[in-house]
Image 1 (cartoon, one colour):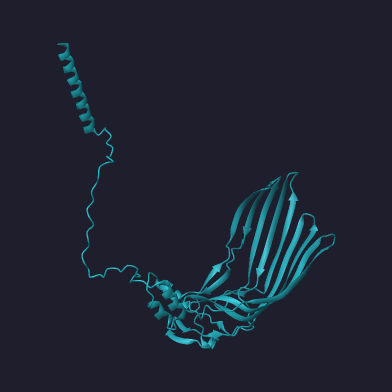
Image 2 (cartoon, rainbow, N blue to C red; image 1 turned 30 degrees about the vertical axis):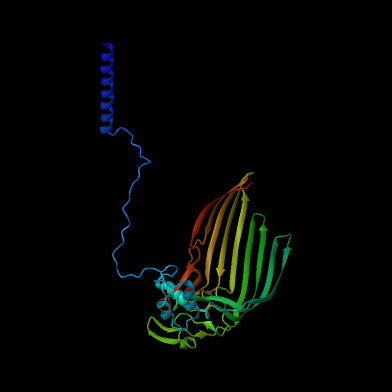
Length: 351
């Protein structure tokens, strides 16, 4: 009797546990781990429909591109029109990249070495106990085979060429004068005479005509770009980005406020004479003379310095380098501007 009761109790527990497992599975409370021994079958690869394409040959180059060596040989040694060469180039290149390659020919990438001969000398001095200090430097350099990188806007290509020769002569003078202990006056003056002594084969500026000095320029019939090619003679003309005069004048006033704190005020006035922005001396890329103003306030306390520094406070617009606008009409120039007005806070800790 007792054995029968125990058997009935065991069956009842088993049924109860089975019912609980079924309830947990239905509620999604059980964790089902993947069977790592199971094998999942995949559908076999299906051959796409035949579109009359020839199957590739092992080791053969791609049929839709030309190898880089062939493209390079076409660009360097082809004598055809650059547009024709660009149209014949295969591969995943943009039209602009093809034109750049087509214009990078062996002729416009050939140039000779540049040599420089010159000297410079100077002196430093202290005068009037030494309220007046300064230095003066003079120099002269001759450039032979001067290497210049130019941009051809009509063909959108860069190339390097040799100017026949150039000369650079000038001086620099720096002076500091302290009339009273807290005040220091300073100035710098630079004179630079830089010009081509021989440059008969200079690149013309974009669309320059024979009447404007571009010998051999060819009419294109396009009103936006009426001429292309040719050379001009820049012998005796100034070098680009070489202002004749540069002057700086300023003052610094320093005064202690107590045993630990010192106040310093400074201001500078800078002047640059005009200069050409491009090696071809385009009249459309000339930067006239300009003036900028800088100032600062500094507070020094022990090993700390707090400063407010202003540059180009007048927000003068001036260009530092330029080039003829690619594929643009006559007279348009792209230029890189100097820094605009900037004011910054500077904190310095000295150890």
